[in-house]
Image (cartoon, rainbow, N blue to C red; front, side, top):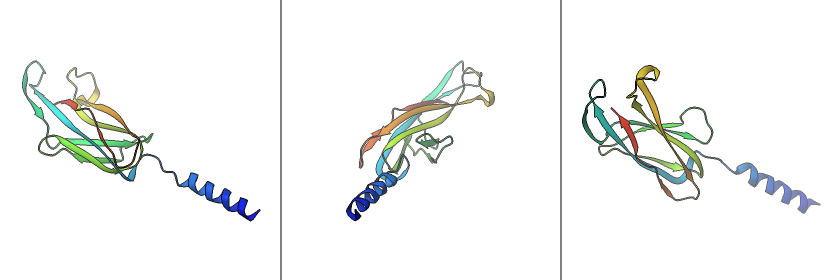
Length: 130
């Protein structure tokens, strides 16, 4: 009987210790942000290239607000390190070329899933209007 109780307690402990998406792991999400610069009314493209100093946000699992934020480096790359297995939402803000959204910005969203430890998941390039 004691062996059965120990086995049940051990199994319950393993189930309770399983953690969802979030920090504390060994994996990385990595990607780039590409910016396209337009004139004020978006009628003419002025410049484009990988965008430095853009804020990129990540949401862990089904959370409602962002869990971490990082800025892109000089060549538009970003990395969220030390993540566990799970589903993530990564986004960056872009000017709204149709000006149909209040405040004139919209989130450009990518989702990704980390399925194994010690892995790097590449996020498709996030294209934004500047």
